[in-house]
Image (cartoon, rainbow, N blue to C red; front, top):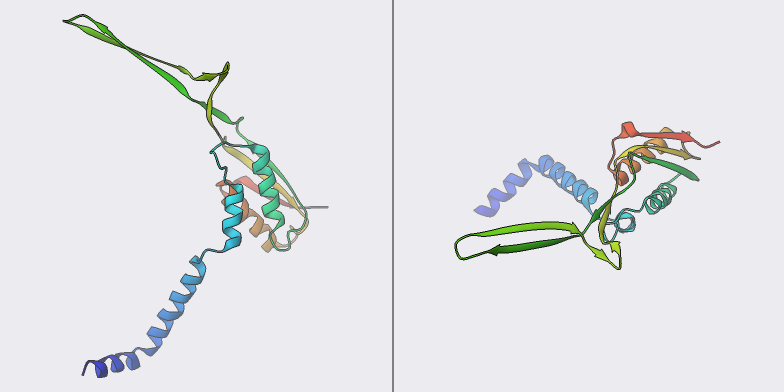
Length: 167
């Protein structure tokens, strides 16, 4: 009896079930991780949380050059300031007092090792803008691909990106 109901349901809703199956397949393919994307993301992410402008520039050029039809690429990234160093701190707490009252004093000073301040990490400054000059930038689709890649790599809006054709 239940099998007849299922068969009747499938027959009555064949088009809807097929459409849902296709949508599910498209979503699955779109969300499936690809090795290329993961390798590019791993290569551009700093391992120790320390910002390196030269490495970021190098990785962006390599990534953009790998996009289909882009060709040779030149990139200029303008930052709001230099990278900010976040130092480690030594914290000293001293408690003093007699039986009836006590006081606590606390002090912090940058931690130093062999006379140099210990830096925990270097934070990337805000990006003011990016200029990309590429051989394949005469094509609108290539310009869009470049802009989207820069937006994703640097976490900036399209309004901060300009793409030009190389001469």
